[in-house]
Amino acid sequence: MKKILIACLPALLAGCSYYNQFVERMHTDTLLYQCDEKPLTVKINNTRQQASFVWDGKLLTLQQGLSASGVRYTDGVYVFWSKGNGATVYKRDRIVLNNCQLIPER
Figure 1 (cartoon, one colour):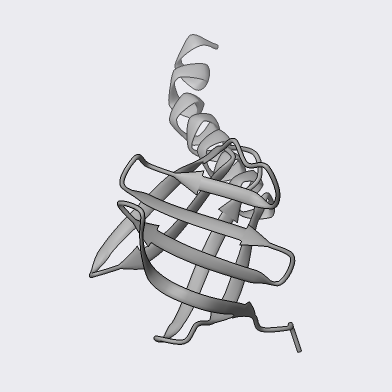
Figure 2 (cartoon, helix red, strand yellow):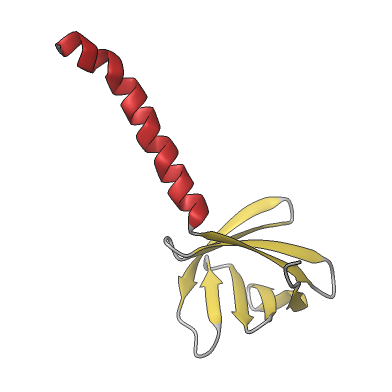
């Protein structure tokens, strides 16, 4: 009996890992924005309260922070701030992506 359990353990653990990845994807929204400078794709993970996107060839993952209005994510250098259908990206208090408008799903 122990041998069967030991033989099945890796498969069970792999199944748990796959399930966790599936749940993560279920709780992640992909938002497409058109900004003045270029398009922006942002993934919002509601469970982890994170926003991630690629900027300057780097994947940035920002944690949700305090905001008087809208939703604000930051890593201390970059800020992604959205309110309604609009968003702005800052780097050290300087706007790097402005006038980003959410592209409606088709």
